[in-house]
Length: 384
Image 1 (cartoon, rainbow, N blue to C red):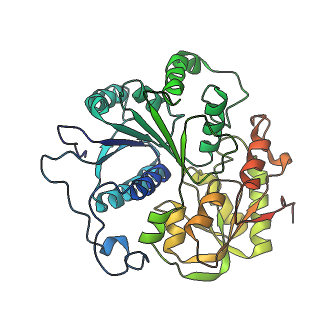
Image 2 (image 1 turned 30 degrees about the vertical axis):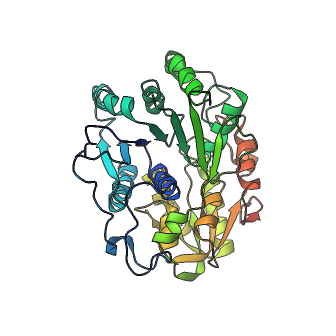
């Protein structure tokens, strides 16, 4: 199941828990030219040749230290696991080492995982992570001695992480902020505080943030590097563009931010107004919700096997892509640079929010939409 790193340990150790995080590690590694030389072949730079037809990069020579080892801290959600496995295949095609950890495979799994990773952590020169809010990652940060730490995008959460780091606040996901800390939060508080200190640049530690998200507040001493999805554009597409519109799903209902009935009505109205025929489901959307969406809107529900940036670049994709405030309103225009696809984002009406939504939810979601570049902004829809 796992591919072990060489005895000397990797120069760079990356921890990912979602397909998007793994994609962004590949984008970061591409920018920094990690690993072996680019695979030769026709279509280089245009993405005409699909990844499956490319010769993989050269395998690491036996006994040498790998430049990058990707550690997948596998979640339990079947959709996420499936996308992660596909992304792991692409990473191996690039010549990177992939280590799959059943990090949540039972009560003893975290101890087994952390114990097995400790020697690698202590020898790694650089640690890359996709989710600094993750308790798993925060625990691993207390072990590493790496002088270089890199945070790659985990979607819109990166915007909140950067703001919290700049203000010296505790690390809390935006949709949970405003509520009282639970018992587990209080127990874990010392680890979270330690992680925040380690993610603060010092004379002994360099910190880089690799992101396609806008940042109003830049933490002092942090290096910010732009992610323009160069790897995605080089490996995939250009896509075939259809005449209709596609919709992008969101997990705002599943996270308790938006009311399910209001969301369904908004999707139905948007689809009717813009002639959408397909709905690309978010990997965390519930099966019951998707069944109801299909039955009441007539949309074809598509469960992508890769992150949407790759799906859209691979095509076919609608001439218009409709979305609610989410990561894709920032990433899709970059991935689809040079095409005629228009990304349109629909605001979240405050009346759609649940009673349990964080007090910061409306402001944060408006910020996600308002800071998006190269998108068409749509007003919040009302019942048809």
